[in-house]
Length: 164
Image 1 (cartoon, one colour):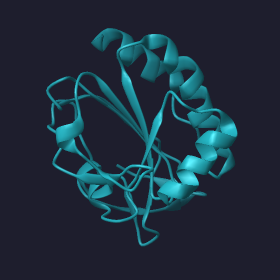
Image 2: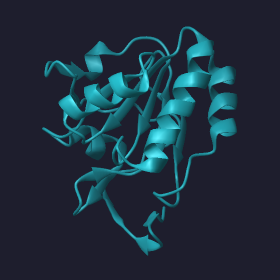
Image 3: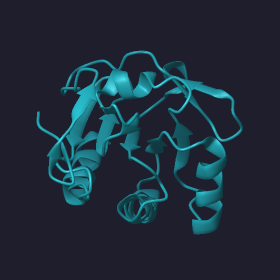
């Protein structure tokens, strides 16, 4: 899998996920600095990984997913970045995003490694969408080939609809 950032090939740490893989254990930080682990998952889960909420593409992406995915009901959606939890909380408050929970991989980077989304040596996450079934197995995964591009939103919505 080749991922580029502004046209330059980047190296990702960890093994990219495939449909059917089980998501390895990980620890992320919530906005209140408590831990969020794989044991906290239940039901159909969507992880949206982004380099930083404070960049234009990430900002628009999370706002669009927030607007569109809030209509789907039983799907739990998380936006994951290495932004500090305080910055994530500030961004959500400033943008009225309350239907997507932000989680940070700044402390351990083990979510990035578990999902093959950790950009080396920048220690940022590449843009990806990962959908897990209720058994923590990967039902859908999309690694965006160019980090500065948007994901294929329609493909994500179709995948969620087929899983529910």
